[in-house]
Image (tube, rainbow, N blue to C red; front, side, top):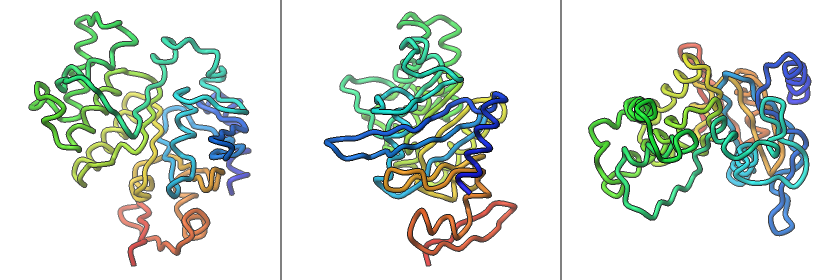
Length: 270
């Protein structure tokens, strides 16, 4: 299945549908390969979820796709251009990323944090238009009533929403989110996934998200890329990946599938 999908993606890339492409990329730490010769393609205007067990290499892979981390071998292409050839300012206006851990040592309000997303565009001299992006991002993430609170006054979930708002204010074509649902309750997890779906469908954003709950991947994604032990385990449309055979290959456990409102729901708690 994965090989057939890769061949299809190569064809799509030739017609301009693939926006981000990884070719035979590897990465090692202390002599141990954590990403092993991975090749994938991400379609423009889609939500692509990265799934797989802990330590599978998902976060390392998306870090290389945003140039947050260098790759040892292979190639990462953004709109057909090697990511290494982009100037930093140019790339920051095109690709934004939210890491798992975000530690800020200065005391900021929510509004101040979100305004940092405009730095590649304004260099800290925000125009009226820049503040418009900040306001829109705050409203998207339902933070208006707490925009003047300091980050250390927020719950973990509220703080996570503020960091996502900062990424939205950056207004890039490509948004990469590494486990953005951490620390969020069910209501806000669903709200964020709906917001990402809206950004994709209404504004044409291309969104990459590392997510542990495979049901969020199933219900909100267009495509899924599965990693295991640093290797590509499967890739394809979510309906191709969400099946018992493929999921057992990825997670080494039996996972039943139920259909609810045309969505495939994974039953893995019995």
